[in-house]
Each structure stands twice: as structure tokens, then as C-alpha cells.
Length: 429
Image (cartoon, rainbow, N blue to C red):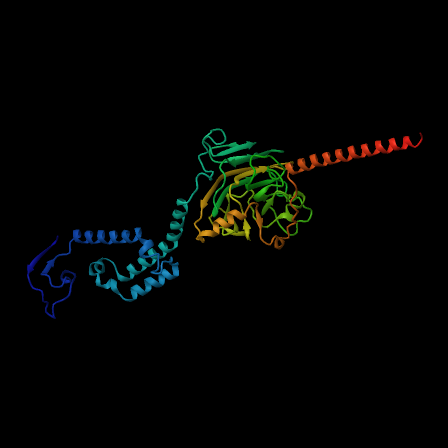
């Protein structure tokens, strides 16, 4: 291919110049002429080598022999150590076309870019593999709430559009919600909610907000952002209107976490301060970009993160340890407006299953113990814990037995009174 054998001589005289044509030891001496075709083939080989490393960057470039991903600085140090050995100078065909300095700069840039983008791309791919579609609400919303095959129901003023689900419009006294039909059966999970709150009202003249639910009951209207109060389960409230008179301790919109046991009551007048486990201020209203909530639950640890810029850059909002959730609850989202209004749009609810190493008996033990949602050491959150009250059945049974007891007492009293009256008559005869 552009070279021909002149003679079979495996030795080279000391005065003979070294060129790229006689780099192959113990082979016939070859003569060749540098042609455009030869250069083109060499460039193609170099590009193939470049793309080979590109498609295998996670193995050859991004990962240390220990298995961890390399940071850009670590990658730069690795490249510097490679080039310090000056091995690229042995590739004479490349020397003829590109300078060593240029190759160094290009390779530095390439490896650093791969080190920055590779781990995030790999994480996204791994995360997509664990997307639980049976629990997720994503576009397109075909048959949602109307088809028997749909996994979600809608209620109230919720309206489905091609790009979002409008839970409530910018109108007064509206409530809307969307609820999953399938009980939640994941022990370790991550929920990513995408939404947008916007309207014509000025700041602090808008309302009320929306909520993300994971509760025992579903499809029930109520005063708490479109759902019932004294609920059982987990709730994330995005409150856009300050009801309390004292607002010096926080700014709105405010995102808070609450765990209900069936007796705790969300207090609108105090913006839920008495039952809040954690929260943060997040300017999610009238934002240019969509807003995101990232809720992660693993090993009885709940973590809430918020992204209001749409740049996939999440900030810590709340972290609650020792939180125990039963299985079989329902995922949902709701919103409400009162005298003050806003559009509350929900784009998606994506649920991912997380893989966590556990002992064999640990999961079964926790599942048997957790019958109601609870938090270890509730006192640290300054939550007004109320004693668990009686259910409806218990109240009815108690009332029946009370009536029966009063009836028996009345009958006994009537009999005793009759005998006393009869004995009193006998005294006069």
C-alpha cells in the first residue's frame, strides 16, 4: 500500500537514518514515498482511534482502576503523567502531521470533557432503567381518568392538555387533583415532580398552592390544598400564600413536609408550622422555567431537594431521619384556590426504584412493624403530637354500649322505685 520491498535485510547501519518506514524490526527494509493517500489513511486511523476512546470513555478514561469516576482535575493529572513519559513521540506518522503540543492540548480537552459529562450521562442511563412506569405520570396522558386501562384518576377542576395537567385554573374557589390507582409498593424510591405555578396576581395576593401526596386514602376533596385534613401518610406542601400574621421567620412560597397519622391536623392559619417536619423557601411562582421537586426515601431517610431554575441543579430543602412509611399507599397531587388564585400545572410525576443493600431479615421486620406512618424522636421537630383518637366504628360501638348501659340502669331504677312505692302503700293498711 504505497510501499515496496527492496531487499531482505534485517540489520541497519549505525549511520542509517531512522524513519517511519523502517520502524518494524526484523522485517525487510521498506521504501515508501509519502503520498496524499498515505496521509489520508493515517488521519483516518487517528480518527478511528479517537472515536474508539470516545465510545469507551467510561472504561478507559473516566474510571480509575479502583472503579471510581475521575474528576476533571484527576483526569488532567492522569493525562499529564502519561504525556510526561513522552510516548506519543514514537508515533512518527503523527509527528509528520500534528505537533506533539497540539496532540497534548487536544487530548487534555477531550479527556476533561469526557470526565465531566460521562458520569452524569451514565447516572441518567442507570436511573432511566429503574423508572417505574406503573407509578409514574408522564406524557402523553392518553385516556387518563377515563379509560379503564389508565393507571390514574382525575377529579375536580383538573383539565388534561397535551403538555400538562392543569389542576386548578386562575379562578376563585377551585379544587383539582390527580391520583394513582395502583398502591405504592416500593421500599426505597425517588420521586421527581415537575410543575409550574403562575398567575396574574401580585406577590402575596395569590393562592393557595399545591401538594404532593403519598397517603392511605385517595380521591377525597378537602380543605388542605384540595384534599382531606387529618390524613394518614406523607405530604409535601407548596404554599404560595402566607396566612399567619407573623411572617418574619420565612418567605413565601414555602415548601414543607408533613407526616400524618390520622389525627394530626394541618393548621392553615399558622401555615402548618405546628406539624412541619422540615421545609424551605423556594421562588417557584411565576418562574421562567418549570420547577422540580426531588423526593428521595431510602433506609428510613427522607430527603427533599428543589430546583427552581430548570438547570438540573438541586438545592437541599429538608432532611428527615427515622421516618417510617408503610407500603400500599397512593401517590397523588392536588391544588386549590380560594379568594386568591393561580394556575397550578403538573407536568409529570416520575418514580424511580432505588437499589439498597440490606440484611435478609431487616426488610421483613420493618414491614411487619410499620402499620402507621411515624417518625422516631418526633419531639425534635416540635410537632404538636395529638393522642390517637377513636375511629368511626369505635365511636358507634361505644355509643351503642352506652345506650344499652343507660337502658339497663333505667330499667333497674324503675323496678326499684316500683317496689319502694308498693312497700310504702302496705304501711297504710
